[in-house]
Length: 267
Image 1 (cartoon, rainbow, N blue to C red):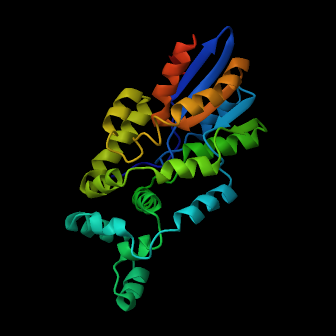
Image 2 (image 1 turned 120 degrees about the vertical axis):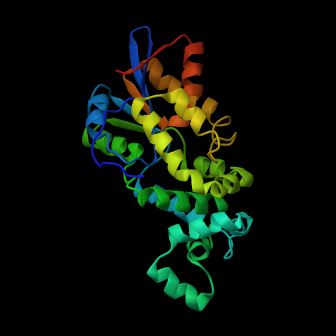
Image 3 (image 1 turned 180 degrees about the vertical axis):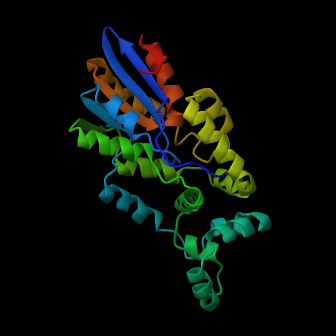
């Protein structure tokens, strides 16, 4: 899977309006092979307040890493993966350093990479490495956060790191295992995701990612109503943009429609 590194037009943006109050809800991708910085500068320049799902400062990311490194030395997740999937994933993780360390510790690269990690953190480490090796080096969340700071916008976070970690801890283990066992199909999965995201085709993107571990109640059903209620006061005032993981967008837009807001895609 090869992507040309460069900037693209951001199309996963929805205008949310009511009584002349204009806001924008944007679906983010935590990893992506293209930058959207130019588009994000244009969008963010239109508003005074910028909302993010959760804190994105380095200290907050370190808190997540600390929580994620509280698992067992021999991660039980690895033993639940099929032999075929383990072989593929081990090859992805392999390196000269791991081969050297593994020789003495009698562990392969996958085991070394995931030891002492919780299952959810181990999964995201495996998945993010897979994407980075294929040029997915950008983050819409981080680009938007950096632009908002550059433009000196008023920044608000909708959740605490602790709330986000509790949601991650409740991702069903079987969903993580099932997705890891599908690693031979990740190439096509990522390609479809990127194609639909670039087109701004939310419905097709959601339909194609139903098997992803975070498409579960603790991440969506339980959080969407809370996120909506925390966004609502800002959108009632107007002049705000909210950046949320793209899988939250449809449910939250439906909630705004029920509150009498009109929704349209684009600027």
